[in-house]
Length: 121
Image (cartoon, rainbow, N blue to C red; front, side, top):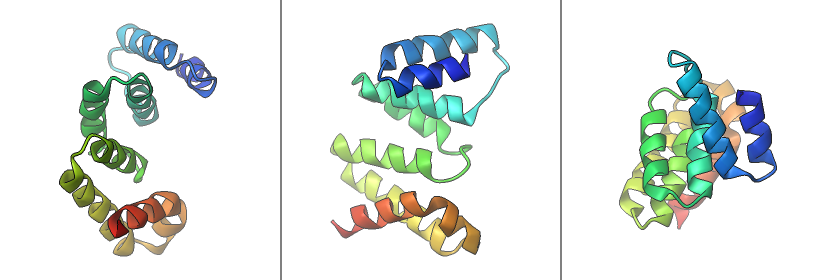
């Protein structure tokens, strides 16, 4: 079902992505997937369900490996006018990568560069 949700999202069907992921959760209550959770938050965001997306991103950030969830959360905060909160998260991304292991920069470069751009504005 996660593969189906990915395919639905890839073709732009955010609503069916959300529905599929909710069915997956109902059918497998103990199943946890950081990637599935990120996809769920993104599907909500794409549908304009901003409050729900913010809630899901906030729940996802503490356990998502890497910086993508944190960066997407900060971008949505910024778009909703919560600039100070977004800036704080962008700074956390920058510091995490600046002071983390060198391989982390290579793996997370996209999100690091995004954070730096948003901190410069």
